[in-house]
Amino acid sequence: MSGSASLSTDPLTDAEKTDIRRFMGYPAIGSQISGRSSWRFFTEYGQNEWRMDNLAPPELQQVRLYLQQIYPLETAILSATDNLDTDQAAVWHHNRQEVQDRMGLFNRWRLQLCQFMGTPPGPGLQVPNNRIII
Image (cartoon, rainbow, N blue to C red):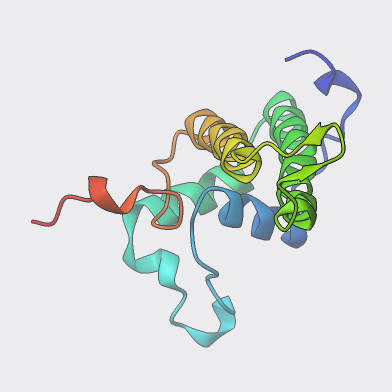
């Protein structure tokens, strides 16, 4: 994606890491000081944590570009709920699929972030019907 060259190559902040976990569908890990950080018990969590701490400068820029794309998509879903009570007003017609369409686009970008990070989507991003229990 173009446009990432102007983004910071500094290590990810804790806030950015929190958003990356959240967008990738992973739960909060809590305080690592507690000795029971959940990522330690699951391969994908640890892999994701290692990657966030060891990205190359161009990869850091790319991740920040993904975040720049995902933040407004999330906000747009919230603002779309303002029109849920209106089906038609004068010549304006509400798109009944707006929230669903926006969620689809939001989730698509979230999945692209997962693919770039090389980590499977977390439990919060998986479709419940597609889970395999062994």
